[in-house]
Amino acid sequence: MTAAASAALTTEQIGLLARAVSRAPSVHNSQPWQLRIRGTEVDLTARHGVELRRQDPFGRDRLLSCGAALTDLELAVRVLGRDCHVEYRDEEDVVATVTIGRPRPASARDFALYRAIARRRSHRRAFFHSRVPDGVRTAVVAAGETAGVHVVELGRPDKLAELLGFATRVLRDDRGYQRELELWTAHSHGWNAVGDGVPEDALSPEALPVAGLVRRDTPVPDDVVLAGRLAAENLLIVCTDTDTRADHLAAGAALQRVWLTATVKALVGSVITQPLHLTGFRARLASELALPGVPQAIFRYGYPAVPAAPAPRLPLGELFPDGPAGELR
Image (cartoon, rainbow, N blue to C red; front, side):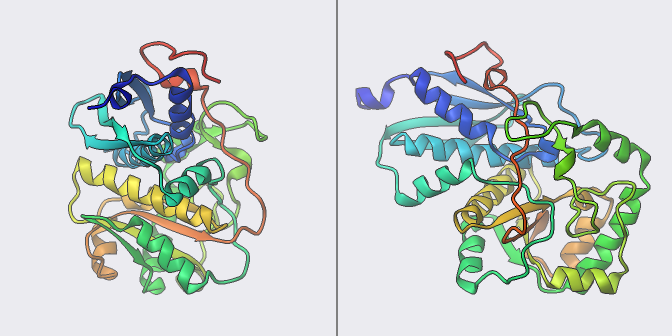
């Protein structure tokens, strides 16, 4: 290994990695990750005290979130001009380790996706009324395809409408779920807000699929109306061959590649996972839609009708449980 390949990261390089990870999407904007720097190895670790017992009782969305952060971390390493290897870990605290390798020029695609990290938004509003061109849709879908992960375009809106309508009614009446969502609703505003949680002004008063997060007053359209709305949207379902911890991380990483590719194409999107935690929902969804695996997330995307502000972020210093790594801003 060359000296350049074995050199420790500088403070500026660590800051670049931290900023990329901090901008990843996460369930309820909980940002459930931290970083541990060990020379040329970077551990993505679980942030303690982040639990969503009703929304995410088995931690699946937490791992999807960490998978998205891994995609950002890998892209940041590549734009530094270094190769890297990602290893999923089975330890309780360490989610994955990224080993930084030899110098390697970043590709134009790496740069494009990296630049999209700061522009990516969760858009829980109606989209502009124009269809996404076929070529763009193909590129977005292809970005998430990898071994064991499949990205499927919606084919039966009537079946999905029936299932989502049922899930909306259940979640709307679930007091525990609603209390937890309220706790994770951030009453902060603006482009420079600091913290975690979903901004109040980012939530939509409309019905599914626009609403995304179901609240007590979320309207419930009948199945026919909802099917029509689903048919007018661009919807993807991210599936995996099996349903292990590694699958959840891989699905999150694929979802972020899809989302960043959409961002490069001037699109915005949002993720729906809440219904997938209801007992039997994923099995029925896989059966009714003849999916090629286990559904992990639903992604809706399109052209924005109105701009969306970024969600608040924790200070970069909180990414480092073992102490600050230089003066990160």
